[in-house]
Amino acid sequence: MVEAVLDLHREGAGTRAYDTRRDLVEQGAVHAVVARPARMFPGSSIGVCVWLLRKPTGHATPVHMVDARHLGRPSGTQAKGVYVLDPAAIATITATLTAAEPRAGFSVVVAPHEVQAHGYSLNPPEYEDRAFARASADAACAELDTLTVALDLPSYTTGTDEGWPEHRLRDLCEIRSGVPPRPLKRAMSQAHTAREAVPVVHPRHLRDGLIEAGDAPDADLGTVEQQHRLQTGDVLYVRTGAMGQTAIVGPSESGWLPHSNLLRLRVTKPAELEPAYLLAYLSQKAVQARIRDRSVRSLTTSLSTTTLGDLAMPLPPVADQRRILNALQLVDDEISMIDRRLAAARATRTAFTRHLADGTVVLNGEEPS
Image (cartoon, rainbow, N blue to C red):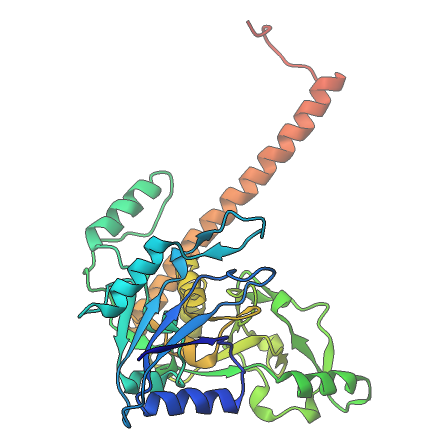
């Protein structure tokens, strides 16, 4: 007999929750996990998973992970924003769970060692990338040819459909959370009496890949562990709520402290990965959507170091990374030039309209027909 258990799966649930998941997996008690749509309860956007449990086998067994979050639909009741699973969606989930093979793009069977590597997470989106398909080389060139008719791009040609080899971020970077909330609060409260106080970088300070922290509060550096201090080249990533903002630490921010709601990525293999290239990769909207899709959804979306570390990143050789960065800089320069011309044209139109309307300037030549 398979039994259903609701799991309010959120990061930071504590050691007891971790031990429970570990014991259930290692004893073979978890048959499957189904991630249900958000907003299935009035007044809450908590993401809920259903654990399908069975009598323990005594040894770890594969777990069937089903991501059914996209199957929800508005209930049509007065409970505004509440989603439900209709009979067709329930039939789809049931058919998936009873099928001999997983359904591509919807479910995956995960080996015990993979669950262990994910910190015994029972959150299905962490185990399957559903929305990040690589385009074919011909399709990529065709798209660029269409988009760049009016732009002067660096020369490019068709690559391979396989793309660059992929590496997990955890194998390239040390990923660490920002200063924990309690020590950070204490350090900030003692900043006015500290021998050495430094700014604290908050999520709001990450703008367009850079840190703009003119209003950053200070904290007592002496009360915070050395491991939390930022270094030049560190890449910061917002881990909660409206995640996705990224920035690289410059020389002027070295030694500062990261807020609790930030993740810090420090490249550990500089011969294989340029920090600026890591920033460029993580800044892509498609990559950020992929990361959000794998993140734990509770009262607020939250990204763990394990989940981010498990992200597979296509990795060109360092020489190619530098060439890519130079090419992107040329495009950025052209964007800046177009933005300046557009701003000037808009300002000109405003002034031209005002002066023509009040008669301070008049048009030369014949009257328009």
